[in-house]
Amino acid sequence: MMRIGLIGAMAGEVNELISEMRNRTEESVGRFVFYCGEISGAECVVVQCGIGKVAAAVCTQTLILKFNPDAVVNIGVAGGIGEEIRIGDLVLSEAVVEHDMNTTALGDPLGFLSGPDLVYIKSDCRLLSVFCETAEKLGNRVHRGVIASGDLFVSNASQAKKIAERFSAKACEMEGASVGHTCFLMNVPFLVLRSVSDNADDSAKIDFPQFAALSAKKYGALIRAALPVLQEEFQGEGTE
Image (cartoon, rainbow, N blue to C red; front, side):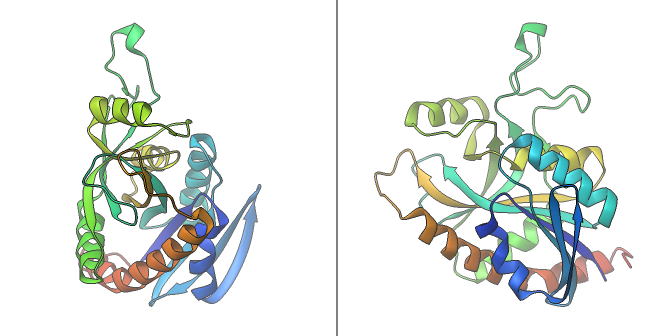
């Protein structure tokens, strides 16, 4: 049986999944509480990491070392970038980038990560394919592309436009690239999944708590549907 780690920054992003777990147990490591149990026949570890890149990285590293997941999926909400990205759409990461990483004074390109020596970290193609196909079957509008992360709440169109121009990003938030960076260093497959809560090109206003609750239900349905498919994918490669 495969084991998948599911990470969300806020309580509202993980509580729906925690409530659906069978045979649930919990274990605290530092300030993180990890909930272990079964969702759709797969072993899952669900955890709230908190907001920001450091919290996400520490949580991801702890999850990997303590629970040894076969894959990690980071769920949550994000700001959409581009006219084609609408509120309520799903954006899944083909790659992630840290838009606030800047060692250009040393001659590096913007976003360059020393060590990996990359700007973009690619997501796992199996996870991406399964989640995209499953999301579309469930009737969601789905976009594949770059998700940009940084310790900055992007709140205006000019900030979003810069990120789009520099990295061709379709969404921006504060944790996904940090989760991906950590998984890359630890050789664990990952995917970042975001529901678009706002868009600099869209004047529509939303009730954020209500949107977060609806997004959590959407993730729950998607994860329940995708996990059996992932189980087959990983078992096909000999994962016990």
